[in-house]
Image (tube, rainbow over all chains, first blue to last red):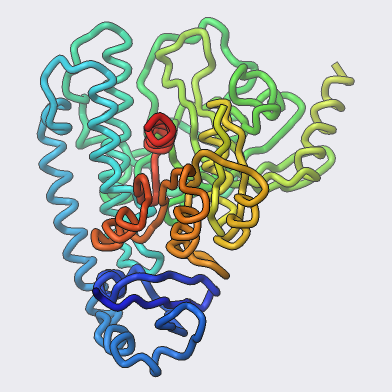
Length: 323
Length: 119
């Protein structure tokens, strides 16, 4: 039976018992780094130098520059694969039958898109690899939204129009009011997706994107800056599903973000002036397919401290009292 | 409804998992490492444990072994960013009911949880 080992890293985390083969896989792929202690029984620990077999693995780990080169090559392969996918019709992209149900599309989508989650890339990875994963991830996410829209409208799924030429906005400077997406030559930059021209919502929201939203990219997160005023504070209350009570906020916007996009939302309240930062993910979007709901996207906020939440509640109460 | 214990040293991951499962009606518990998980298991009886592998104090593999020995009725789904095939095999051989790699999609989690609880 193969020997088992434990290893620990600089953050105090422990992995084990696992075989040397597992450790070799993880070290070689760069997923296990900063190992600073080891053990053969989980009780007695020592520096890796006390375990020649583990030390050998660590010493033979790919040098950072070699790992970066491998990642750069992998990025090229991902972009090649993306180009192939962009040349196919949707059901071929996912390898399913033409006329498949939306559930079949979704299952195939989840399997395929997982390969390209930007978060799979290690933190110090070559930037091209991160961008390549992000490009593929966003392409597939856009394609899935297109498929769902087509099927919901009772239409056969066709190729997504102008997929190669989807405008990609340049990173927005701070507080740039959000405008219809500008084109850019940044082919490998993760794309913010301009919403298709859908039916005009029957009940238009009382707040509009151009009033308050700006986007800025930070690696694979998107920082969304929101100027919160009495007029647009309904972003916290108006949507029936995504609201402060349910731990979210709905941002009316002509530009959308794919479901699952990690975002950092920075709220700037005007009176009293205060900045609140919250991390979250896009959990809902309406690109216009539902004419009864406002166009935009909903963000589930996480780790919003109670004190910050109380401030928002007090702000909303003040606005309500004025009305 | 079933009780599920979420074990991960990353508070952000715990929050994400909680958000994904909160709407399904489960009772959710949280622990930030393997040792805290075993303490909670002694007090409560979750039907399912969502278990990270690389954690402080007591690793996920050690926690998995203890859970299988002391609470054999509890199912364990490993959720880890360490996606070596050989590690997956070792976790499954150690008694994990499934292995989900991070990052994950909400549907992966909810469907895997439903399957694990139904099996």
